[in-house]
Length: 144
View: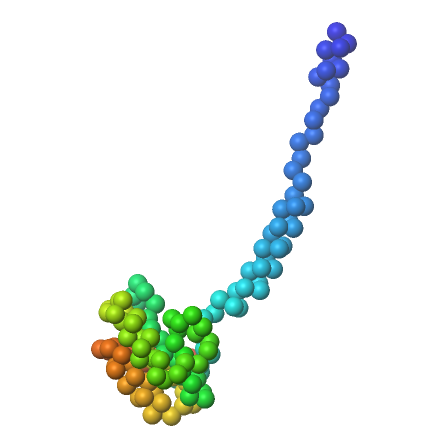
């Protein structure tokens, strides 16, 4: 009988070592902290403030950005943070509109540029085949 009692006396310890899981979580946290700022697409533009209704659609609109120095940027090209030549804007936008004719086209102009640059951008987009071109603004801060 002693043998039977000894056999059941030994117990196995069931514990989960969570240290590797914590290490993995910390590495993932660092990766997300580093990559999150890189995911912001587009050029930093100081938009004018205006009260307007937000647009909704399935696909992202075509956005032609104009920075404070008057350089043009397109949001759908492979390198959206690199200025694009005015001659290439019409070609690239025309190709995008051919693929999806109902896609919205917007101009995002810095509030410090002259009005002529915005008009010139709108003309380039209309030459590319955009029937309607919208202007992007920021919602004004309510000071009440």
